[in-house]
Image (tube, rainbow, N blue to C red; front, side, top):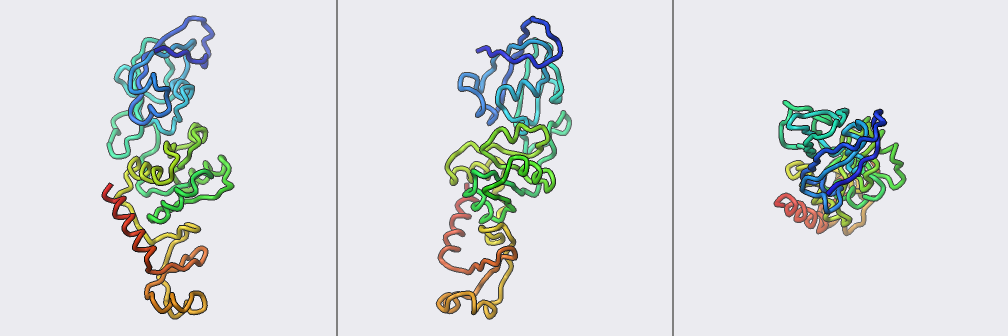
Length: 261
């Protein structure tokens, strides 16, 4: 299979050059089926940078962590000459590849997120698991990127265009449409199974929960709730009250299932 690249270099020669490309693991999700998990020929003119080639194939550079050209690691600014064998790998969240040219910042050991406008249900589920997750249904792309950079948050998005911005350092394109599958995808891809802190964060506003004294809630909750339940928590952000009940038991079972995989 051969694909033609755009002329992105400064050499205006009409000579058509070729390289062999191979993308690995989930980077294949962005490619046409005919090019997935196999080597294919890429044609181009001039001396384009490898970053431009990758993005021309609709792959967000933010998901790329390692590029090997003829077995040697290179950066995004490497310019193709023709005849190279090129392998492109996704993030290595759990492996140390420090001897080679790492193309993004080190994995974030404290997973905090900013979520785009199409992933509100996913944001709520992440909060229920205790992850610091910012979400608004009116976020603009530039605002999401600015928050990610300022607060070192991982961008979760269904819009690959956000992750193609050069300044983005940590981001992940969600493959699934279903919120339940989205959650499982994020947990497995970012290896979050051992970082759950359920009942620690408000699903409504992302504020932290703190223990609340029962005697101080009499004017807020119903008599039945005050009678049947003993443990209460209050969100320091929006003031929402949580208490032990059947819904917490349901969440506990749900979390246990997620932890088992």
